[in-house]
Length: 248
Image (cartoon, rainbow, N blue to C red):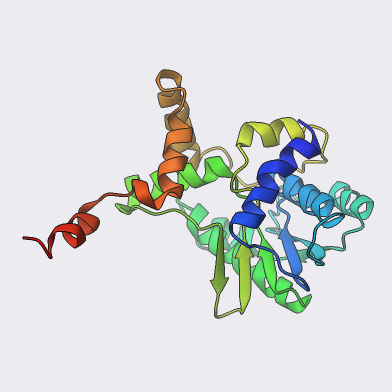
């Protein structure tokens, strides 16, 4: 999978949702995984020929797992090659989640705390936008997580505005499939996730369910993503009532 092929859906998402403007300073959230490193590499490649003039910084929120510390040196070297400033924000999130609160379902609280730390550092560095590495499969899995565990028809948006922080939030890889990210990032300096809950989450369960169904329905993910993306394919109770209330 080449950068040129990856940039095609990447540029389409940026254009469709008007994610970047002249003068933006974008903080790229770097977890150390394949998704965030791919995002940084594609933004850096796009920046070289983009019609918009913008700056990038890369930020890692170190959750600081005491028994399994991370070494982010390979990511620093990766960022140096791309000529992107890199910052690591040390936190006590790992201790708070697992040692102090002893959360049995840690992912939701951890996500909120991690994003809060990322947004704060982004503001400190003068950024007006934060870019996250969510991809097309994340959209689908989040939809099912909301449906199964919250009873909501919901997923995250390609871009949003955090009014309390005065920050834009963009997800430029919204059209890219995870399998293509895996192929593209095979030589990137991925730093292993040290979280004790890694691979043992509700999201991982949903991923496995969807994969199982897709064995029987090969076009499953395409249809689900199309339904989420296309307003004309939405037809639930509220739309029904709007259409018939003036008639009946």
